[in-house]
Image (tube, rainbow, N blue to C red):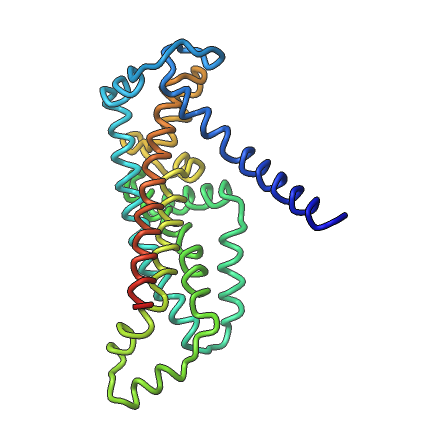
Length: 264
């Protein structure tokens, strides 16, 4: 097989992967503007489904709950995950390998097991189920992801730079803000974005630890699916996609801006 044929096969293979990933998303977006309730036929363009969504008080409450939970859990997990990554990088202690193993277990453990565990835990403590239990549960689930992403930024970091800065008179706070924080900031942003996405679209943990007054958007979509797939659900999914895309664009914009600043 010559190089030209191999290149064509590689391009075709890559194109098929992207088609497999994004065509279903494109179909959901297109049919959210379909005038017909059926997803089998196209009956014309309309914005009625979006108007119906914004007029639905329950959907708006679920959306607000999802934002509050995702933002709160992202802040908590980003702070704790970042501090944990710094601690695991800077300090050596007995049992460090066990900590690494426990972090990996939290990531690979089935989410339904974590949901049941959190349900039992909060029930034993008599904590009322609602926004608070959802925020704590999501933060617990997201901390290992943030920690691992931030910790990866330390790979190849020369710690002698810190020693040199301190020899020149910089205190630990100055070293952290001037050297360590700029190094790990892209990792913090990436970890925070991942935590937000995981929290915003979670269903399983929400199912176990949410209360009657704390329905989230994914749970709302799941309940609507019981009556069949409709353009209203497509519109709701499209809004979620747009929200996530905006978050990604803003995050990447901040990242590129910092890279340009560092280069200049």
